[in-house]
Image (cartoon, rainbow, N blue to C red):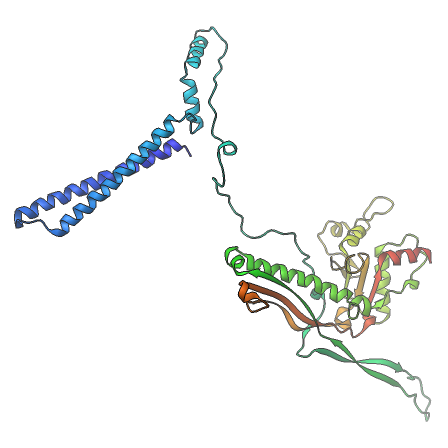
Length: 409
């Protein structure tokens, strides 16, 4: 905005207010005179109103004087306050006027105008003269959106363990029996198996001042804590040394698919599905890493055509192998396991994820020396158990190993 214009408008506004006050004061004086004529004495209330108006008018006069002085200071400054005043001063200088007259008379083809230094933000501003506009929220790199629990049956428990009865052996003597002969005797063994409840947790410690003064900080802490919890839960469900599905699911059988030097991911998944179906289960989903997924769908044949249909390659349809949908997720990764891992499973039959305590975010003021230091502890935690009832309902393997085996065994 033009500073001179702003000052001028402010001055006019104050002067306008002064006119109103003066009119009001004249009215009070007339009223005072009428009171003296009629009653012989002035009303105290009217005298007080007149005194107050006189004080206000005096204050307004001071404001007008201050504004006019400010305008004079700006107008007499060696550095013009805006581009308009700079150009005007330059045009009115004698040198430019002489050049302009010569130009009009045809004595020169042009003229030069020099201006004084112009006020710029970089050259004249110190500190936060122009306040920044803040965008709401705290920005950070995204966490994964797809998690393992989304594809598992979910349940809850009030205990510290999940116990299930598993048939550990079966002797089958079922057969054709001739008339009068004894039938064969069947037998089986049952075993009680436990999956213990385990905790996943982390915490933040933050000052009350930071929580109170930083917009959105409490929400950000809660959100980031929950996202990191879900990431660790994925690692537990897939790669825990005792209960992870890479340990409990049946291994992909390498020796069942060999002598194919052109084998690729699609071939390995077909073999994994076949192995699960041969064990009388119906696979419900395929889990594989995002990197290997894109390597698979962009593969081409000898003529340069995509092996997968174009609607799969270009993302308009979820890819399937033998009707089994593929889940591409960073839960399968090099950090927790191997980016080339895959899991083909009938998840509903294989396992159930039990929550003893669903993921929770709690704020505690009483923790360690929080009270004396005025700190708050924010804890994110959850307790869960993952029993794998039927390992044969899944096939866990590695693409790199499976493809090498298929071509060289």
